[in-house]
Image 1 (cartoon, helix red, strand yellow):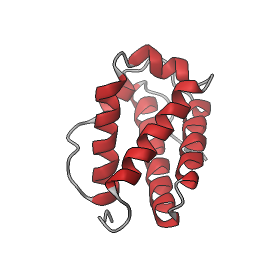
Image 2 (image 1 turned 180 degrees about the vertical axis):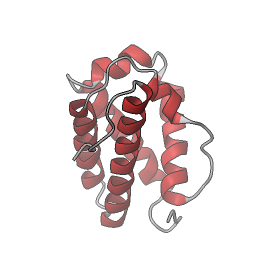
Image 3 (image 1 turned 90 degrees about the vertical axis):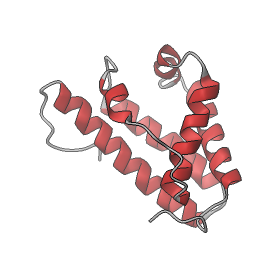
Length: 131
C-alpha cells in the first residue's frame, strides 16, 4: 500500500529524474523515448506525480498510461527488461530499502501489464510475461 512514510517527495523526485537521465543516455531505450517525448519537462513532472501517487498515496496522478504505450509501434521484452534493469539500479542507489522494494515490485507489475496490453492490442499471444 502507498504510504507517506515510505519515502519523501525529494526521494520520488530523485528517483524519477535519475531514472530518466539513465533512460535518455541508454543506447537501447534512449532513441525510443526521444522519438515519442518532445518536451521532457512535463513528462518528468507527470512521472513524479505518478510515482508520488503510487508510492506515497498523494493521488496527484490522473491518467491512463495504457493507450499511449499500446500506440507505440514496436515494443519487445528486451526493452522492458532494460527499463526494469535501469529502474532497479536507480532505486538501489537511493539508499532506502523499503522504497527500493516497493518501487521495484510496482515497476515489474507495470511492465508486465503494459507488455500484456500491447500484445493483446495486436491480437498476439499473451501467454507468459517478461520473466
